[in-house]
Image 1 (cartoon, rainbow over the protein chains, first blue to last red):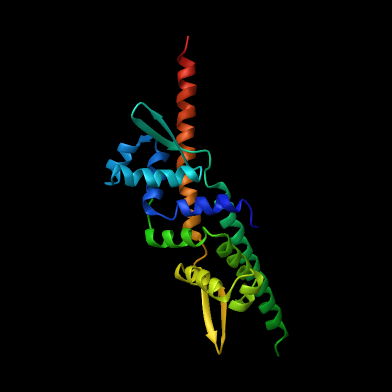
Image 2 (image 1 turned 180 degrees about the vertical axis):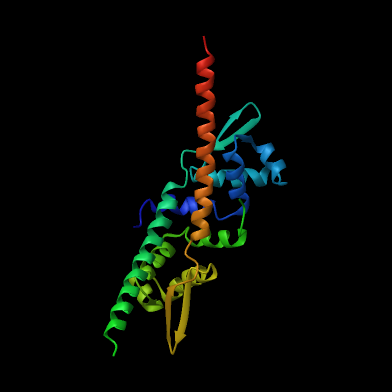
Length: 112
Length: 112
C-alpha cells in the first residue's frame, strides 16, 4: 500500500495548511497572479510566494513568469494518488469491521 | 468548501509522513502496542510515541495504557472529511475543464 511515498508526503503536507487549500480552490476556478492571491488572502507577496512554492514542489501548482508578473495555475498532479491512498485505507478498515461483525454473528449463533 | 479547517490541517499533516501512514496501515489490521510498532518500524519507543501522538491529536488513533503497556488502535476519524475535500477539489477541476472544452467546441463551430 505504501507507494509514491515522497510524492504523498509532499502533497499531503501541501494541503495541510488552510491558505494552501484556499489557493488550490482559487486556482481551480482559473489562473491568478501572485498579487491576485496576496490580495485575496490578505497576505504579503512573500508569504503567498512561500505557500505557492510548497504547492509547486508537490506538483499541485505550476507558475510562469512573464515580465514582472508570475501567473499560477493548477499543476499536473490532481491529488489522485492521495485520494487512492485514503480510499485503500478506508476499504481496509471496512473489510476488517465486516470480518469482526461476521465473527460476532457466528459467536452469537453458538451461544446457548 | 473550506470546512473543519483545523481538523483538515491536523489530519493531512498527520498523513504527510510515511511512518505515520505505515502506523495507520498496521493498526488497520488490528491493535498494537507501542513496542510492537517500534519493532515493526525499527524505531525507538520515543520516536514511535511522537508519531502516535500526532495521529492521536488528529483523532486518527486512540491509545489506552493498561499497566505498562500502551495499546494503539484506529480512532474515530477515518479521513472521511479529507477524502471529501479532495473529491470536491477534483470535481471543481473537472467541471472547469468540461466548460473549457465546451467553449472550445463552440468556438471551433464558429471558425470559417
